[in-house]
Amino acid sequence: MSHIVVAGSINVDVFLDVTALPKANETIIGKAMRQAIGGKGLNQAVACAKLGPPAHMVAAVGDDALAPQATAFLAQNGVLTDYVKGMPGATTGLANILVAEDGQNMIVVTPGANGLLSPGDIDAASSLIASASALVVQLEVPLATVRRALDVARQHGVLTVLNPAPVDPAAMELMRLADLVTPNETELMRLTGISDVSDASLITGLNALIAAGAKQALVTLGSEGCAALMDGALVRLPAYKVKAVDATGAGDIFNGALVTRLVAGDGLLEAMRYGCAASALSVTKPSANACPTPAEVAELMAQQPQIAL
Ligand code: RIB
Image (cartoon, rainbow, N blue to C red; front, side, top):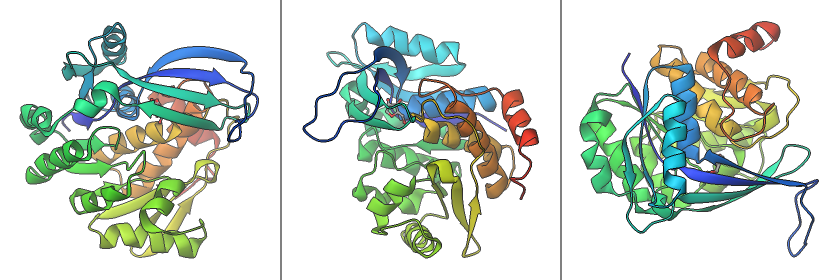
């Protein structure tokens, strides 16, 4: 098993804790502010590094005071940063995140340097991608950059995992380059036009991703677990039961954990179960990359063996 490459975003996350999420045109008083390092790419890379083989990021930061904090955070969490590029004159990506008492969140991302990560930066890392076990991408960097990363990986037979978040309907053209696509339910609805999460709708939605070219498709369903198409039939895995404190980044931890098991040789359902356990533990702590240790994941899976395959 070789390394995993995550080509994606790095953000500084500014969390505002609130009692309940505001409605449009409403002003509310927050409870606390905290800052952390995040970004869908970074969170997924941290999960890969903590739970599996070495993980590298191909990413961009600004030339501001936040950039060294972000790269130091990656290094502290075991993610290799040789292809994290400082973009002159750019600010590091920023995410403003409201987190309510029930653990739900709202996020606004200002891409900054993430928006400057180019297909040329992917080409510069092509030998790293070509020798990887898996490439993981999201949609917080330009679509052309994501496409080039998937192209390079596909040319070299590297497993490609596309997490289409935040959703962009134009990403349907990337499905042909994805071995596995992993939307959440909202993203699946926006990509495919389904309007609910009934079995029939999920089958329709996941089949649409496969018809567009993805080899396999799953959907994460928050507190309802996740589901995938297996030989045309929908298989649902329930969520592990935990007390949620902050659901931010739960999907990222799911994706990172899932990929570590796929490259280790697990089947899709086994890898999804592992991803569910890791993401369940991540929501019991604040921050978007509160990734558990392999021992903690194993303990939860042993404690709640009802999620059998
Ligand atoms: O998925 C959670 C992440 O979304 C946060 O870390 C934030 O940076 C945004 O990218």
